[in-house]
View (cartoon, rainbow over the protein chains, first blue to last red):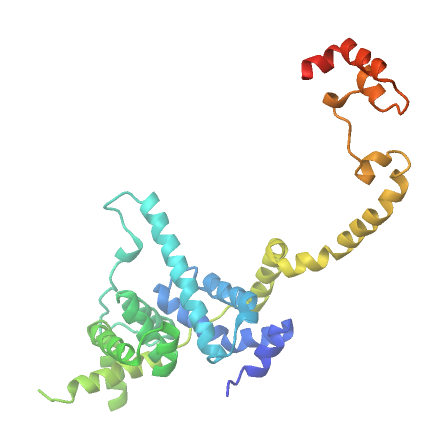
Length: 194
Length: 125
C-alpha cells in the first residue's frame, strides 16, 4: 500500500496542506536526485521545485498505478531531461563549435587520498562529479538504486525498461564509478579497519 | 584473482553511494514551490477549460436572457426582418406592368399596354 496514498488523494482534491506535506516528505530525495542527475548543477534546487510544481498540476492525472514516490521520480527525470535538452540547444547556439558544451564538463578532478574528504559536502561533490561522467542511462539507473534506494521493479517502472536492463545498467555504472570513487573507497576501508 | 572481487566491488560502490549524505534543502524550499504554483496558476488558468466553462456560465445566461427578450422590443420596428418575410430585391422592383399584374379587375388591353410601356420588362425578356 502506498504510504502517501491518503495525502495524494487529498492533494488531488485540491488540498494544499496535503500537498505541502508531500513536498516536505520528498523534497530531500528529489533535490538529491536532481543534483545527482545534473552533476550538482547550481540550478538543481530550482529544477527540484519545478518537479513539485509539475506534480501539483498533474496530480489529478495520477492514477495510482505505481507508488506516488515512483511517479514523482518519473516527473523529476522528465524535468531534468527537458532542462538538459533545452540547455544543450542553447549551448549549441551560443557556444561556437569547439567550445565547451554541457556534456564536455570537466572530468572529476583526481582526489588525493590524503586530502581530507570527510566532510559531507566534499563527499557529495566527489560522488556528484563521478556520476556526471556516466552516460545518462547508467547514471539514472545507479542513482535511483543506490542514492534513492528504489527497488529494481520500481526503477524498471520509472524508466520504462525491463528489469534485466536495469540490473545490467547498474552493474556497468558501478564498474565505471569504481576508479573515480577509489579515494573514498580507500578511506572507507581504512575507517572500517580502525 | 579472487572470483568474488567484482561482487565485492559492486557492493562497496553501492554502500558508498548509499552513505552519500543527502543534499541540503534550503529552508524556503516549500515556500518557493507554493509561490511558483501560485504564479503559474495565474496565466495557466487561461488554459484550464474547466475553469473557463464554469466562469462563462453567468455570461452565457445573460446572453440567453438577452436573446429571449430582444425580439419583443424589435418586432414592432422591423417585422419583416424578424419574421423572415422575403425581402424585395432590386431586380424585383415594381414596374407599372407588374403593379397591374396584381390588380384583380385589370382588363387585358390595359395589361398589354402597361407591358409594352415598361422598358425594364422588355429587357428582362
